[in-house]
Length: 136
Image (tube, rainbow, N blue to C red; front, top):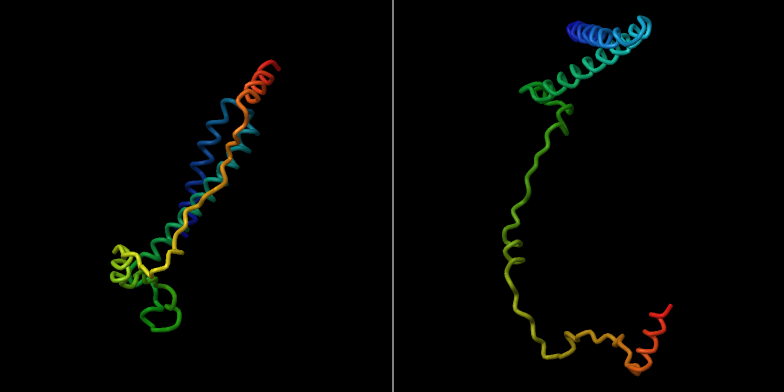
């Protein structure tokens, strides 16, 4: 009953605010219709806000879950244990620099030798091509 009463009060405040805001600029019928829209909007928002806050308070209240005390299956999955296993040794091993293993073969690393993209043309031909492009 308390939720509905507070939502109705909030809707009434929304109606009055919207009606008074529109009454000076619009006809009486238009102001009433917009006031009713304001009532509905404020009522729904207040009801939804009260529902969300009630849900949050119920979840955060200590002893709020009756399934924990009864020992039933209702409490399964309600707690989330966020802990990670200790992996200190693995992290230390990753941070240590390991010396390269030498096996005696020279096939390990070969540098990349890409083909050269620069062509060696005659400088006179290149100058003629530049002059030709510059004229157009």
